[in-house]
Amino acid sequence: MLCRSNDELQLLVNQAKDLCPDGKVADYIPALAEADQAKLSVALFYPDGRLYSAGDTKENFTLQSISKVLALALALIDHGEEHVFQWVGKEPTGDPFNSIAKLETTTSKPLNPMINAGALAVTHMIKGSSVSHRFERLLEFVRCLSSNKDIDYNEEIAKSEYETAHLNRALAFFMKQHGAIDEKIEGLIDLYTKQCAIEMNCMDLARIGCVFAMDGRDPETDEQLVPLDVARICKTFMVTCGMYNASGEFAINVGIPAKSGVSGGIMGAIPKKCGIGICGPSLDERGNSIAGMKLLEMMSKQYSFSMF
Image 1 (cartoon, rainbow, N blue to C red):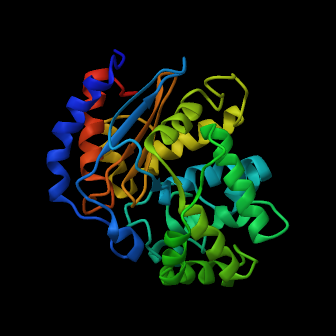
Image 2 (tube, rainbow, N blue to C red):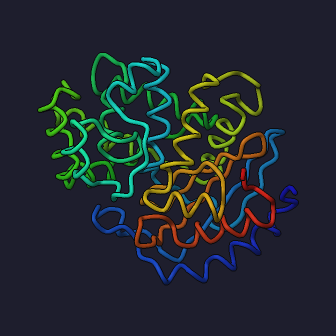
Protein backbone atom coordinates (compact mmCIF):
# COMPACT_ATOMS: atom_id res chain seq x y z
CA MET A 1 0.00 0.00 0.00
CA LEU A 2 1.29 3.46 -0.92
CA CYS A 3 0.91 6.74 0.94
CA ARG A 4 -1.85 8.73 -0.76
CA SER A 5 -1.60 12.26 0.64
CA ASN A 6 0.20 14.70 2.92
CA ASP A 7 -2.91 14.78 5.12
CA GLU A 8 -2.71 11.02 5.61
CA LEU A 9 0.89 11.37 6.83
CA GLN A 10 -0.03 14.32 9.05
CA LEU A 11 -2.50 12.17 10.98
CA LEU A 12 0.31 9.74 11.80
CA VAL A 13 2.65 12.57 12.78
CA ASN A 14 0.00 13.99 15.14
CA GLN A 15 -0.29 10.62 16.90
CA ALA A 16 3.47 10.05 17.16
CA LYS A 17 4.12 13.57 18.52
CA ASP A 18 2.42 12.59 21.77
CA LEU A 19 5.66 10.76 22.66
CA CYS A 20 7.93 13.81 22.26
CA PRO A 21 7.71 14.87 25.93
CA ASP A 22 8.87 11.38 26.99
CA GLY A 23 12.34 11.82 25.48
CA LYS A 24 15.02 14.48 25.63
CA VAL A 25 17.26 16.26 23.15
CA ALA A 26 20.97 15.42 22.91
CA ASP A 27 22.80 17.72 25.32
CA TYR A 28 26.33 16.30 25.31
CA ILE A 29 26.91 18.44 22.22
CA PRO A 30 25.94 21.92 23.48
CA ALA A 31 24.63 23.23 20.16
CA LEU A 32 22.25 20.26 19.79
CA ALA A 33 20.71 21.00 23.19
CA GLU A 34 18.97 24.02 21.64
CA ALA A 35 16.67 21.86 19.47
CA ASP A 36 12.90 21.98 20.02
CA GLN A 37 11.94 18.54 21.33
CA ALA A 38 8.27 19.02 20.35
CA LYS A 39 8.99 19.03 16.62
CA LEU A 40 8.52 16.09 14.25
CA SER A 41 8.65 15.87 10.47
CA VAL A 42 8.55 13.11 7.86
CA ALA A 43 8.88 12.77 4.10
CA LEU A 44 8.41 9.82 1.74
CA PHE A 45 10.14 9.94 -1.65
CA TYR A 46 8.95 7.40 -4.24
CA PRO A 47 10.94 6.22 -7.29
CA ASP A 48 8.49 7.93 -9.67
CA GLY A 49 9.30 11.30 -8.09
CA ARG A 50 6.24 11.60 -5.87
CA LEU A 51 6.99 13.26 -2.53
CA TYR A 52 4.70 13.27 0.49
CA SER A 53 5.57 15.13 3.67
CA ALA A 54 4.09 16.26 6.96
CA GLY A 55 5.08 18.11 10.11
CA ASP A 56 7.87 20.67 10.40
CA THR A 57 9.29 19.76 6.99
CA LYS A 58 11.22 22.97 6.32
CA GLU A 59 13.29 22.58 9.49
CA ASN A 60 16.94 21.73 8.82
CA PHE A 61 18.82 19.28 11.03
CA THR A 62 22.32 17.84 11.02
CA LEU A 63 22.94 14.29 9.86
CA GLN A 64 25.12 13.20 12.79
CA SER A 65 25.44 9.39 12.60
CA ILE A 66 23.33 9.16 9.44
CA SER A 67 26.43 10.54 7.73
CA LYS A 68 28.22 7.27 8.57
CA VAL A 69 26.26 5.53 5.79
CA LEU A 70 27.24 8.17 3.23
CA ALA A 71 30.90 8.23 4.27
CA LEU A 72 30.97 4.42 4.06
CA ALA A 73 29.55 4.54 0.52
CA LEU A 74 32.22 7.04 -0.56
CA ALA A 75 35.05 5.07 1.12
CA LEU A 76 33.89 1.90 -0.65
CA ILE A 77 33.81 3.76 -3.96
CA ASP A 78 37.31 5.12 -3.26
CA HIS A 79 38.95 1.87 -2.10
CA GLY A 80 36.74 -1.15 -2.67
CA GLU A 81 35.29 -3.66 -0.24
CA GLU A 82 38.46 -5.64 0.49
CA HIS A 83 40.47 -2.63 1.65
CA VAL A 84 37.70 -1.07 3.75
CA PHE A 85 36.91 -4.27 5.63
CA GLN A 86 40.56 -4.93 6.27
CA TRP A 87 40.26 -2.13 8.83
CA VAL A 88 36.59 -2.23 9.88
CA GLY A 89 34.49 -5.26 10.81
CA LYS A 90 31.00 -6.30 9.71
CA GLU A 91 29.43 -7.46 12.97
CA PRO A 92 26.76 -5.72 15.08
CA THR A 93 27.45 -4.87 18.70
CA GLY A 94 25.24 -4.57 21.74
CA ASP A 95 27.45 -1.83 23.17
CA PRO A 96 26.66 1.91 23.00
CA PHE A 97 27.68 3.63 19.75
CA ASN A 98 30.53 5.52 21.42
CA SER A 99 31.97 2.60 23.42
CA ILE A 100 35.72 1.95 23.44
CA ALA A 101 35.41 -1.46 25.13
CA LYS A 102 35.39 -3.70 22.04
CA LEU A 103 38.49 -2.01 20.58
CA GLU A 104 40.52 -3.47 23.44
CA THR A 105 39.31 -7.01 22.77
CA THR A 106 39.23 -7.12 18.93
CA THR A 107 42.81 -6.22 18.02
CA SER A 108 41.80 -2.55 17.71
CA LYS A 109 39.56 -3.25 14.68
CA PRO A 110 36.14 -1.58 15.13
CA LEU A 111 33.29 -4.08 14.89
CA ASN A 112 31.33 -2.15 12.23
CA PRO A 113 31.19 1.21 10.42
CA MET A 114 28.08 2.41 12.28
CA ILE A 115 29.72 2.80 15.70
CA ASN A 116 31.91 5.86 16.25
CA ALA A 117 35.22 3.99 16.17
CA GLY A 118 34.32 2.34 12.87
CA ALA A 119 33.01 5.60 11.43
CA LEU A 120 36.27 7.38 12.28
CA ALA A 121 38.23 4.62 10.55
CA VAL A 122 35.96 4.93 7.48
CA THR A 123 36.19 8.73 7.35
CA HIS A 124 39.96 8.34 7.54
CA MET A 125 39.77 6.43 4.23
CA ILE A 126 38.02 9.18 2.22
CA LYS A 127 40.45 10.25 -0.48
CA GLY A 128 41.65 13.81 -0.97
CA SER A 129 44.71 16.03 -0.97
CA SER A 130 43.78 17.72 2.32
CA VAL A 131 41.14 17.65 5.04
CA SER A 132 39.20 20.40 3.27
CA HIS A 133 39.40 18.57 -0.08
CA ARG A 134 38.18 15.34 1.50
CA PHE A 135 35.24 17.12 3.13
CA GLU A 136 34.38 18.89 -0.12
CA ARG A 137 34.29 15.52 -1.91
CA LEU A 138 31.93 14.10 0.72
CA LEU A 139 29.74 17.21 0.63
CA GLU A 140 29.49 17.09 -3.17
CA PHE A 141 28.57 13.40 -2.94
CA VAL A 142 25.75 14.25 -0.50
CA ARG A 143 24.57 17.08 -2.75
CA CYS A 144 24.50 14.70 -5.69
CA LEU A 145 22.47 12.06 -3.82
CA SER A 146 19.97 14.65 -2.59
CA SER A 147 19.88 16.60 -5.87
CA ASN A 148 20.30 19.75 -3.81
CA LYS A 149 23.42 21.80 -4.55
CA ASP A 150 22.68 24.15 -1.64
CA ILE A 151 23.27 21.58 1.10
CA ASP A 152 26.10 22.62 3.42
CA TYR A 153 27.22 22.02 6.98
CA ASN A 154 26.27 23.87 10.15
CA GLU A 155 29.42 25.66 11.32
CA GLU A 156 28.12 26.30 14.84
CA ILE A 157 27.28 22.65 15.45
CA ALA A 158 30.54 21.45 13.85
CA LYS A 159 32.50 23.79 16.15
CA SER A 160 30.52 22.64 19.20
CA GLU A 161 31.16 18.98 18.34
CA TYR A 162 34.85 19.59 17.65
CA GLU A 163 35.35 21.27 21.02
CA THR A 164 33.65 18.42 22.92
CA ALA A 165 34.86 15.41 20.90
CA HIS A 166 37.11 14.08 23.65
CA LEU A 167 35.88 10.48 23.48
CA ASN A 168 36.16 10.41 19.68
CA ARG A 169 39.73 11.69 20.03
CA ALA A 170 40.43 8.84 22.45
CA LEU A 171 39.00 6.30 19.99
CA ALA A 172 41.08 7.76 17.16
CA PHE A 173 44.30 7.85 19.18
CA PHE A 174 43.76 4.23 20.25
CA MET A 175 43.38 3.16 16.61
CA LYS A 176 46.39 5.24 15.59
CA GLN A 177 48.46 3.46 18.22
CA HIS A 178 47.50 0.16 16.57
CA GLY A 179 48.06 1.30 12.98
CA ALA A 180 44.44 1.61 11.83
CA ILE A 181 44.78 5.40 11.43
CA ASP A 182 47.87 7.16 10.13
CA GLU A 183 46.97 10.84 9.93
CA LYS A 184 46.95 13.70 12.42
CA ILE A 185 44.06 13.12 14.78
CA GLU A 186 42.99 16.78 14.96
CA GLY A 187 42.58 16.83 11.18
CA LEU A 188 40.47 13.67 11.28
CA ILE A 189 38.29 15.04 14.10
CA ASP A 190 37.83 18.27 12.13
CA LEU A 191 36.71 16.27 9.08
CA TYR A 192 34.47 13.95 11.11
CA THR A 193 32.69 16.72 13.02
CA LYS A 194 32.00 18.62 9.81
CA GLN A 195 30.72 15.40 8.26
CA CYS A 196 28.29 14.94 11.17
CA ALA A 197 27.19 18.59 10.88
CA ILE A 198 26.05 18.34 7.24
CA GLU A 199 22.58 19.83 7.31
CA MET A 200 19.36 19.21 5.37
CA ASN A 201 15.61 18.77 5.80
CA CYS A 202 13.61 15.55 5.85
CA MET A 203 12.70 15.87 2.16
CA ASP A 204 16.37 15.93 1.16
CA LEU A 205 16.99 12.92 3.40
CA ALA A 206 14.06 10.98 1.93
CA ARG A 207 15.50 11.46 -1.55
CA ILE A 208 18.88 10.10 -0.44
CA GLY A 209 17.06 7.16 1.13
CA CYS A 210 15.31 6.55 -2.18
CA VAL A 211 18.65 6.35 -4.01
CA PHE A 212 19.71 3.53 -1.68
CA ALA A 213 16.26 1.93 -1.93
CA MET A 214 16.71 1.80 -5.71
CA ASP A 215 20.10 0.07 -5.47
CA GLY A 216 22.07 3.28 -5.94
CA ARG A 217 20.14 4.67 -8.91
CA ASP A 218 18.88 8.25 -9.07
CA PRO A 219 15.07 8.00 -8.91
CA GLU A 220 14.63 10.81 -11.44
CA THR A 221 17.50 10.39 -13.94
CA ASP A 222 18.14 6.64 -13.48
CA GLU A 223 21.88 7.41 -13.26
CA GLN A 224 23.87 4.94 -11.13
CA LEU A 225 25.06 7.30 -8.38
CA VAL A 226 26.22 4.52 -6.03
CA PRO A 227 27.47 1.15 -7.32
CA LEU A 228 24.99 -1.67 -6.77
CA ASP A 229 27.23 -3.64 -4.40
CA VAL A 230 28.03 -0.52 -2.37
CA ALA A 231 24.32 0.29 -1.96
CA ARG A 232 23.67 -3.31 -0.91
CA ILE A 233 26.43 -3.24 1.72
CA CYS A 234 25.18 0.08 3.12
CA LYS A 235 21.60 -1.16 3.38
CA THR A 236 22.75 -4.34 5.09
CA PHE A 237 24.60 -2.36 7.76
CA MET A 238 21.51 -0.18 8.19
CA VAL A 239 19.49 -3.32 8.99
CA THR A 240 22.03 -4.91 11.35
CA CYS A 241 23.58 -1.85 13.03
CA GLY A 242 21.68 1.27 11.93
CA MET A 243 19.61 1.97 15.03
CA TYR A 244 22.40 1.72 17.59
CA ASN A 245 21.83 -1.10 20.09
CA ALA A 246 18.08 -1.12 19.32
CA SER A 247 18.67 -2.56 15.84
CA GLY A 248 17.30 -6.04 16.57
CA GLU A 249 14.08 -4.75 18.13
CA PHE A 250 13.71 -2.27 15.27
CA ALA A 251 14.06 -5.06 12.69
CA ILE A 252 11.14 -6.86 14.32
CA ASN A 253 8.91 -3.81 14.86
CA VAL A 254 9.63 -1.93 11.62
CA GLY A 255 11.74 -4.19 9.40
CA ILE A 256 13.48 -1.76 7.05
CA PRO A 257 17.07 -0.58 6.45
CA ALA A 258 17.40 2.62 8.50
CA LYS A 259 20.02 4.82 10.16
CA SER A 260 19.47 7.27 12.99
CA GLY A 261 21.42 10.21 14.36
CA VAL A 262 21.39 12.03 17.70
CA SER A 263 19.94 15.16 16.09
CA GLY A 264 16.74 13.09 15.84
CA GLY A 265 17.10 12.27 12.17
CA ILE A 266 16.28 8.87 10.69
CA MET A 267 16.90 7.80 7.08
CA GLY A 268 15.01 4.80 5.74
CA ALA A 269 15.57 2.95 2.46
CA ILE A 270 12.80 0.47 1.70
CA PRO A 271 14.06 -1.71 -1.15
CA LYS A 272 12.30 -0.96 -4.45
CA LYS A 273 9.63 1.06 -2.64
CA CYS A 274 10.69 4.47 -1.30
CA GLY A 275 13.04 6.54 0.81
CA ILE A 276 12.08 7.99 4.20
CA GLY A 277 13.39 11.07 5.97
CA ILE A 278 12.36 11.81 9.57
CA CYS A 279 13.43 14.35 12.15
CA GLY A 280 12.26 14.42 15.76
CA PRO A 281 14.92 15.79 18.15
CA SER A 282 13.46 14.19 21.29
CA LEU A 283 15.49 11.00 21.85
CA ASP A 284 14.93 7.76 23.75
CA GLU A 285 17.55 6.27 26.07
CA ARG A 286 19.37 4.64 23.13
CA GLY A 287 19.75 7.86 21.16
CA ASN A 288 16.96 7.30 18.60
CA SER A 289 14.12 9.74 17.93
CA ILE A 290 11.36 8.57 20.27
CA ALA A 291 8.50 9.93 18.15
CA GLY A 292 10.31 9.03 14.93
CA MET A 293 10.54 5.39 15.99
CA LYS A 294 6.82 5.32 16.80
CA LEU A 295 6.03 6.99 13.49
CA LEU A 296 8.05 4.37 11.61
CA GLU A 297 6.24 1.57 13.43
CA MET A 298 2.87 3.02 12.45
CA MET A 299 3.92 3.61 8.84
CA SER A 300 5.38 0.11 8.57
CA LYS A 301 2.05 -1.39 9.60
CA GLN A 302 -0.10 0.94 7.49
CA TYR A 303 2.02 0.73 4.32
CA SER A 304 3.44 -2.81 4.71
CA PHE A 305 7.05 -1.56 4.69
CA SER A 306 8.68 -4.52 6.47
CA MET A 307 11.09 -6.63 4.42
CA PHE A 308 10.49 -9.64 6.63
